[in-house]
Image (cartoon, rainbow, N blue to C red; front, side, top):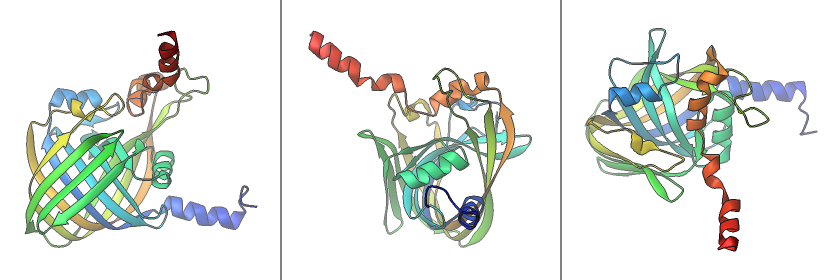
Length: 264
């Protein structure tokens, strides 16, 4: 039966978990420099700031061998762990529940549901992420320079953690993961761009100052992923970051609004 998988079904599922492929991707990103103190503040230990206080805002769309087709966007913060540079995923948004569940459960990505779009007209690109009636990420770019095709590698740092069953603290220590993406770029366009970040109580992206924009890039690419657990963080140490990566449940108290309306 479907609720209890057989060994051959488990093997097929675990193949998709262990060897994710996100292909035919189209990704628009804008890199900017932020306040080094702010960047250091949002990085959970044991991650450390990279040499440059860079933040990348990205919007894209992909096909896959594991979660279907999907749109999404993210905010990445330059970080380092034991001398290895990568990007800490500060915020990430998907357009449906399948890639959201996959990435949160497997990699520890802080994924939330949101609407996103990516548009192109000649060498002019725009992209955005909307959530809760707010346009959280807005990108504009003009990309006249064709960089051609190349292969590269990207590293993302995430944390797997869950709240305690009684709601107080975390259930166990957080797990730092490192996801490595072998990236096969079939086309890359580069140029200038702009980024606007807006915030809500649940998604405070506007707390990242945009001091200067470095560059804008559009990639057509395949991402071949692999993930591993590389460290643990005491639950009490990670708890402030864990709650910051999720919605503020206390701000979603509709019961109190109803009671206040009745009392009034």
